Length: 132
Image: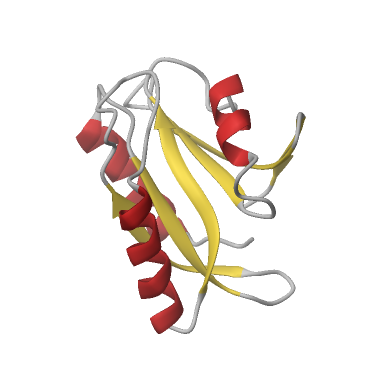
């Protein structure tokens, strides 16, 4: 998936605003080869935790409907890591099992002055970093 700098900046801003808790949201894409990220949609972290995120199922459905009304598809789920490197935790890997084919973007803000953004494809226990 190709994602422009302004959308990455939007996710980083969200991560900084929600710190010390993790943030979360979804990315709408226009399919192609490669797919292009078009929109970022923030979601509320129901867990309000620096260690994990939880998105309300109804909110996810609403966000997916909004993305589809824009003529796009769900392409990625993003969240932040506020204390660790932006690499999927076992909790992230377990959560990803319910979302096959969706990229996982993690915004690392352990050092808020030097955020690190990485994207992954997670298939069962397999984690593969992809370029955005």
